[in-house]
Amino acid sequence: MPKRYGVKDKDVAVAHIVSGLLDGSLRPGDRIDRTEIAMTLGMSRVPVQEAVNQLERDGIVAIPYHRGVFLERFDADVVREHYEIYGMLCAIAAGRAAARPSPELLARLGEIVADMSSADAEEFENLAWEFRRAINQEVAGPRLRAAIGTFQGFMPTAFWLACADSQGYMHPTYLDEVDAIGRGDAQAASDVVVRRAARMAETVIEELYRRGVFDPVRSDSGTAEAASGPRLRKGR
Image (cartoon, rainbow, N blue to C red):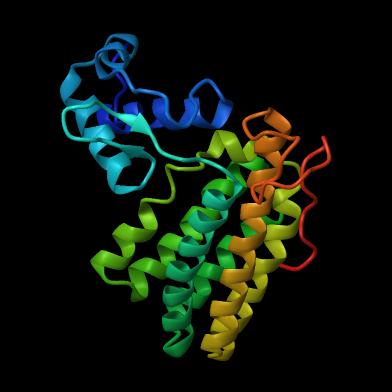
């Protein structure tokens, strides 16, 4: 396999495992063969071990003592919890930005949301992360930045490109967030981030039902579900 310049082997291994989870080729409870992954990706076991260590910290795999590496539970409730935590962390940063908005930050956020209006799906996803980075670099400490950063790899850009109309509902929320920060309304800025994260969770869940990763017959609560999957919630 050719050398991946600018990309760490550990991150390639993380993406490989996560992609298997998202396309259904890996299932909860499956054992992760580190040697096989290393051979498939053309790397040593060291970065693969680093990858599974990161995924254990992120709650995606479990590493029982002397038993190997296994995928953790992965269902609709897990996805909702993932985005609930992500929303709360980003809301902290958004609230701080609104509490002391700088002209430089507001100008940068304004540029990003303006670019979002004409961006294609891939560009939009990159701009969304640039939006978060701009806020984090301005007001978040290293621990908060690191915690938020762990969420980027879990739902990679390629996954979001397959989600129908996510850009359509997300762009207005970024406009609302910039408006709240500009007004100095920390609560409003935090609230819009939490609502957007909740809507993102439902988009991801719908896509995973569509792919057959989640069982379309039963919902996460164990009750009967329509074969088309769950409906998106109306609120943001």
